Picture 1 (spheres, rainbow, N blue to C red):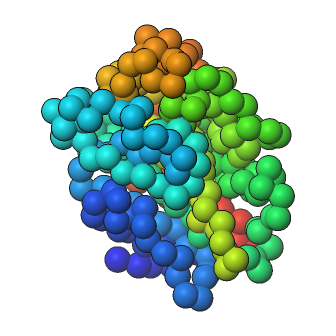
Picture 2: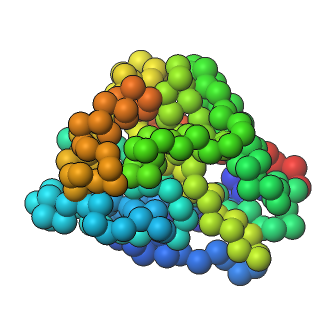
Length: 246
């Protein structure tokens, strides 16, 4: 289903996570917001990660697909329905053509506008958030799990990362990929930890890239969070917060 959201075209797409990641940019490229809903939980590896970081037997036992994306970074757990026992994850991608005023050649600043939009969206729901600006902050754990690091444009609430962003850039445009962990229903707030921590740690091999699972879990519990808001309300808030001028 496709509809209009100001100067952005909004589309909801369902299917296997690998097919959703493989979607091409539209031709011609135009501003689009994609709400992507995998039909099964999936662990998504970054483009340069080795399959050896994954415990394949544990993935199979938990019914989690293994998928690889074309953008870099560490692993991300997608669980749209919360089927793994934690809160659901909201996956939203935004497409921008190269000639768009939002396009920035400097990759280190190219997601600032998007982080600002997420901050405005969260503020409209009663949550005070901030955007990380500057260089990618890597840790030994972030080579394994995306949420263990902090990249430009990513968003924090109460010092905890709640919006992860990666991007795919081509000669025609960019696809900005956003994942937001959601907490179970209740008053708007950020939970003490991202609810998929236990699952993503369980499905990684040990030792994994020099970081044992216990260390990774401890790091994620200190630095990540989940937003306790309704998914549809958050989507509506983001659409309202997106830059409209061309």
